[in-house]
Image (cartoon, rainbow, N blue to C red; front, side, top):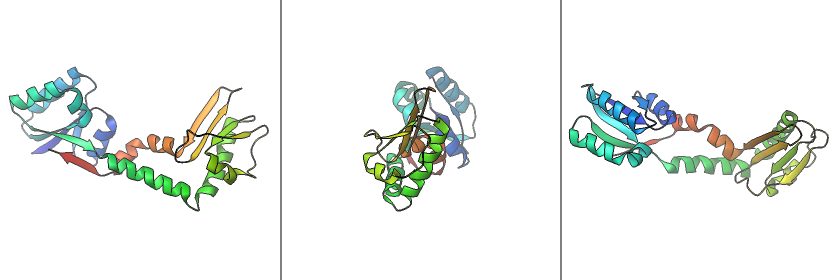
Length: 188
């Protein structure tokens, strides 16, 4: 007997695959109905996992599948507290002693990538950490209250370039990795 996942996204599917649970992504009601029918026709599938978004979006379809019998349906929820803990760790890093050196290195790299006359943005509290950093000609450094945890944003209007290198953006960019390495919670 085995578990099988129907997910609304490949991140959750890939994360559970690391735990040995195969799955598929359903991006529409038709995809979900097809996946449910396939699972029902595989007698070795004992438990069918669905992501919370699938459960919330297609309640009636899942209720009909439960009523028809077949594999036990369970909703898999990625714990919000896990993401909150990662955010807390990033905030602790931004408050720590290694942050200033990291921020300075990132400022130089971002400015070089965006070129002359780049506009760099940092939290107001981070501006003193960037004093004395050698940046390309014409570079400016401005406070940006939208940066929550730390890191930088940059823009070169002349070249039509922009970059979000904030810690929050990095967390979002590492979403798949994070899901694969975070704790998963199964609610029955």
